[in-house]
Length: 65
Image (tube, rainbow, N blue to C red; front, side, top):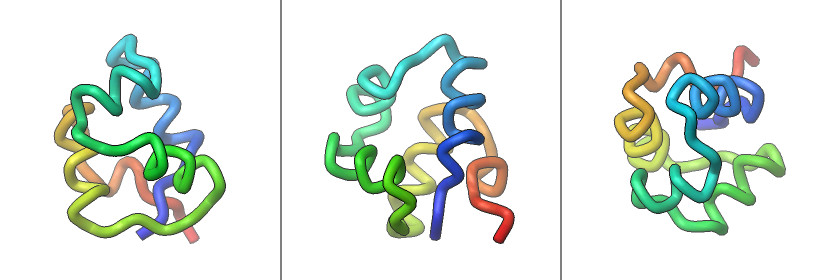
């Protein structure tokens, strides 16, 4: 699964969080966030953790392509 970094940025802004806060609250590593920013795929479980931490549905974060 690929998380769209722009959609992630919007979800972070809605929550008034930065990526560090997401890392601390979403139980994802710095490497995972780097992978997302570099356009790499993440495991479905990881996408779910991020979505849950941000209070959004996982489909709101995925790339359209």
